[in-house]
Image (tube, rainbow, N blue to C red; front, side, top):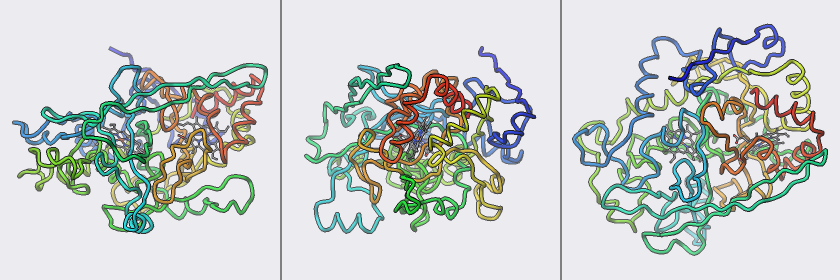
Length: 468
Ligand code: HEC
Ligand code: HEC
C-alpha cells in the first residue's frame, strides 16, 4: 500500500511570501492523492454530496439495456467509460503511446462554415463550430458491441531542436496527426481537427466563483497598453442557462460552468444523456442512423435520462470542489528569485498570480467558495500563442491559434499524481521547459527571454513553477 506522505508547510515563510493557494491547514497529501482532497472550504454537511459525486466520477458506464439500469446508456459511440478514465486521480491525461488506442487525448472535429445558413449560425454564436456532417464534433474512437468506433488516431512526432542560453540544446517534439480506419465513410474534405488532452481537475469551483466582470476587466483585446499581450474574454452560449456567458473551461474557454462542462463530457465523451445535453446517442449524427436508433437508457429512472438532475448536479459539485494543494518544496531563494523572474519575463502577464472570488450571494452551487483569495496563475483569457501551437480549427470568435492561459496551480505535482508530466493542450511537452519553449505569438518575448536565461536562473524559474 502506498504510504501517504504528509508535508508540513513552513507557515512563517509561506505566509510571509503570501504564496499559499488557500487557507493554511496542518497537513496535505502530496502523493498520488494530492488532487483528490475535498476543498478545505467545503462544509461538513456537503460531504455526502461530494462522495456521491465522486462515485459518479468513478462510475464505469455499461451499454443499454443492462440489468443495472442506473449504470447503462454508454455510447453507442464513446471515448472512455468513466470520467476517471481520462482524468486519472483527477489529474491530467496523456497522449497514447505508439500503437495504443487513444483515451485521454481526443480530437474535436469541425468544418469551415461555407453556406449562408452555416455562416449565420456561427455569427449568432449559439453554435461555436459546424460539425463534420458524418462524424459530428468529436472523434469517438470506441463503440459498444455491434457498433464501430469512428476511426483511430495516430500521432507521430518530429524532433525540433532549440538552442538555449549557456550552449545547451533541447529537443522538442512536434506532433503530426493521422486518422485511419474511418468506419462511416469519408469525412468532409475540409475536416478540421483539434487535439485535446484531459486537464487536471483541481480548483475548478474557485475559477467559477471569480466574477465575470473581474476576469473581463483584465482583457485588452486591442492591446491598448501596448505591452504585446492582448487577452480576449470569450463569450459563449450556455445551453443550460440559454444565454451568453463568459467562457472559462476547456483549453479554449468554450464552456461557461463546471456543470455544463461535466454534462458535455457525459454526453460527448461517454454518451450519457443528462438534463443539459439530452440526446441518448451522444455525438452520433443523422448519418449514423444505427447509432441514433440503438437501445438506450432513457427509460424510467432519472426522469427519462441516463443520469438525472440530482446525480448530475453532485457530479459537478465533486468536480468543482477538489482542493488545490498549497505551494511546497521550495527554498526562500528559489521562491523569491524564481518569482521575480516569472514576473520580469512577462509570464505573470497571462499567468496572473491571484484573484479574489466574488463575495457571497453570487455562487449558488458552492457558496462556501465565495470571497476567497486564490492563486491560479491564469487570467482565464485567450491569447494568440503563435503558429507552433495553432490547431487551425477556429471556434466562433476564438481563432485557431488562441488558447486560454492554462492555470499553473498544482502543475508541479503532475508527476506525483499521474506518474507522467505531459503539458499543453495536446500533451506534446514532456517537461515544463518544453512547454515554455512552445510558447509563441503574444508569448514570444517571454519564451525567448526564458531560452536565453543562464542555467541557474532557468533552474530558479522552474523550481518556482514546480512549487505552484
Ligand atoms: C475521453 C476523455 C474524457 C472523459 C471521459 C472526460 N473528460 Fe473531462 N476533459 C477532457 C478533455 C480533453 C478536456 C478539455 C476539453 C476542451 O479543451 O474543450 C476536459 C475538460 C474537463 C473540464 C474542464 C477543466 C478545465 O480546466 O477547463 C471538466 C470540469 C471536466 N473535463 C470534467 C469531466 C467530467 C465530470 C467527466 C465525466 C462525466 C469528464 N470530464 C470526462 C477529457 C475527458
Ligand atoms: C501571452 C500569454 C502567456 C505568456 C506570456 C506565458 N504563457 Fe504560459 N501559457 C499560456 C497559454 C495560453 C497556455 C496554454 C497553451 C496550450 O496549451 O497550447 C500556456 C501554457 C503554459 C504551461 C503548460 C501548462 C499546462 O497545464 O500544460 C506552462 C508550464 C507555462 N505556460 C508556463 C509559462 C511560463 C513559465 C511563462 C514565462 C516564461 C509563460 N508561461 C508565459 C499563455 C502564456
